[in-house]
Amino acid sequence: MSAKSKNRPVRKAVFPVAGLGTRFLPATKSVPKEMLTIVDMPVIQYAVNEAREAGIEHFVFVTGRNKAVIEDHFDVQPELRQTLRARDKSDMLDLLANSQPEAGRTSFTRQQDPLGLGHAVWCARDIVGDEPFALLLPDMVMQSDKGGCLASLMQVYNQTGGNVIAVEECAPEEVSSYGIVELGKTVGSGFEITDMVEKPKVGEAPSNLYINGRYILQPEIFALLENQKTGAGGEIQLTDAMLRLANDQPFFGFTFEGDTFDCGSKEGFIAANVSFALRREDTGPIVRKIIEDMLDR
Ligand code: UTP
Picture 1 (tube, rainbow, N blue to C red):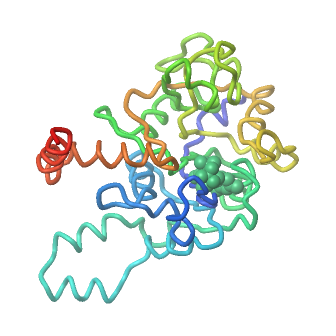
Picture 2 (picture 1 turned 90 degrees about the vertical axis):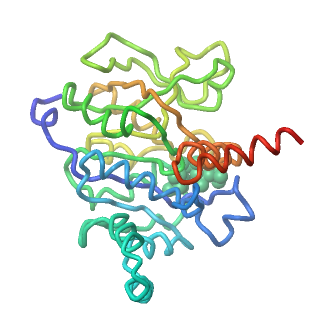
């Protein structure tokens, strides 16, 4: 790994949003799963906010068929703006303005066939170009008192360079659902990753630290994804290409201290809604009461 790549800033973030969301049918037949809401904000907005907080300047969305509404979400809505202005709803106007990246700071490209996460990332190659980039899987929604996961990942990257992946502890019996990393020595506030295993059998995992959906990757990943053979589930897997990249470049891990909700699953999505609603000042007290009343019945 050259010192050059170690110091290169991470300006762009990729959001793969072309998956079919089959675990959430029938809701996702015509509504992208990234547009389902947690309290009153679509899932994709949580990831974009996290990236903005981390200093990302350009937002690259890899979309698919029936996902055009995601592009509309990050555009202005003149009629709505006019109505809110006429009704003196300045707080709502501010909210809408703040949820949108600056003009010219978004790009949308299409993954015509959902061939897997690795293929979706590869579809962003021309827009990202020859620079390190952040990758956020929007389904994985994070909550922490210690700031955003990507912001913490950026801090580790500034110390280590290379490729950096956020990981999180899971129960030992859950390792077979995730990509699991093997820990090497501590480096700054992160650690070296010496191996990665996709969905290991319980008892055979090198740790109980799973890859939770936030990455900083070097652009050399694109050349490897280009000729990456299909892996688990018949899909082009990002982890397989990362393992090949690890032959030439270092990978580091950072343990995220917070909660990650897999909003691509029903239980994760419901848990996220309950957790975010309970923590918010406007909804917390009433939602707590509703849940307590329900449990007392
Ligand atoms: P998932 O496996 O969670 O998404 O991919 P999925 O395929 O939509 O889910 P199910 O199993 O059918 O319910 C993780 C992320 O990668 C994106 C998804 O949109 C999600 O953000 N993805 C996955 C793509 O963009 N393209 C793909 O071909 C596969």
